[in-house]
Image (cartoon, rainbow, N blue to C red):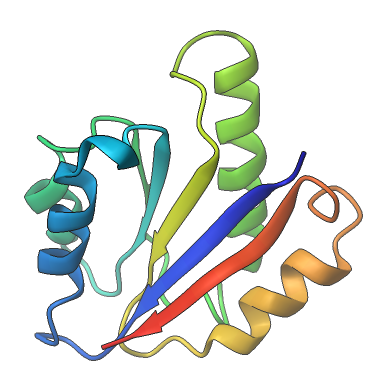
Length: 129
């Protein structure tokens, strides 16, 4: 069964991290892995949700839509590998919090076109704040 990749996107200060913290605090979201894409020299969003989601992966190289598609692929496959080795709990969904600069279309294309991701992951929800 493929894993849903849910994308939360929006401009700086729109409430993405606040929404993420609220979602992850819900006991029904316990089987969720988290990817945070931050733009700039100092990433802070992952620090704000770290207590709620200890299995957070930070994508630090910039906007996931244009510069780190390879990092997105590596992070998703890395989550699967860590889960299979028992290093992190099983999960049935991944939430990707993007920067405000991100266009979700290349993320969709990456999941649809990459042979290693296709079949393992599918797009769930795209939430724009």
